[in-house]
Length: 313
Image 1 (cartoon, rainbow, N blue to C red):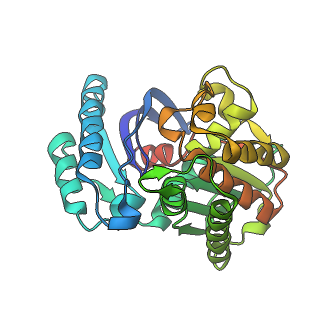
Image 2 (image 1 turned 180 degrees about the vertical axis):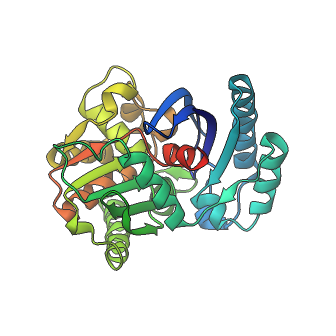
Image 3 (image 1 turned 135 degrees about the vertical axis):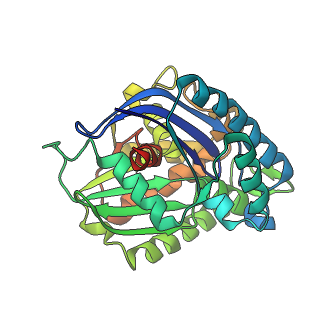
């Protein structure tokens, strides 16, 4: 048994997992799993730089995580940074801050590496399920990018495209510094066009339609599941391995895109940091399901974070 810590720093959130890994049984036992919305990618699509206030929010979360890692006595730590820090001109400032706080250099991984970790984390415990046909298509809808991975026991093909809930919101829904509430039909059509173009790019290298089981990861997907189940609060156990039909995803997406900020914020399972970006994220999920003809999505709480932890173990 090895005690490991993994940090996944994305465009919208930073997450920590401290776990005991047993390579013989293939089990990860969570000791601490948490997420903080830091919006590191604030404005990156427009400016090409990480905003000072976004960096400070991220460093504050890192300081909190450093204490948790120390308390649990994790033997190894791996810090992976994804889309926003990959794109930014001033990512050196981000790297220096993380090293000062956590003592490790963040690995600004490629989209393909991101996809590999996501696939491992999401499917390691699904491979023995008789009710789920392979190959799997794992879709990780992040803030700045979406990863597509097709595989059986191992990855066959992967692609990352620059379509995510934060990027689409900032690109199409922000007017005069505020998110349009609710968006216009023209704005929704512009997001949809970007998503469809991204799916075209993904299909150049990943056989999306060959997959028999769609596995959806990350906050946009888990929040859709929470809404579908009408949960009184966010409940990871109820969400993990839940299934949501395409028709239900469509209903929820249409409601999210018609609703006001106040209506979305009133959803008891909605994280405050997702209120303004969940509509775009749900639309990405719906477009994928319609493109590949998936009748349902299997929702996983285990994702790139678990894949990172296994890479350490």
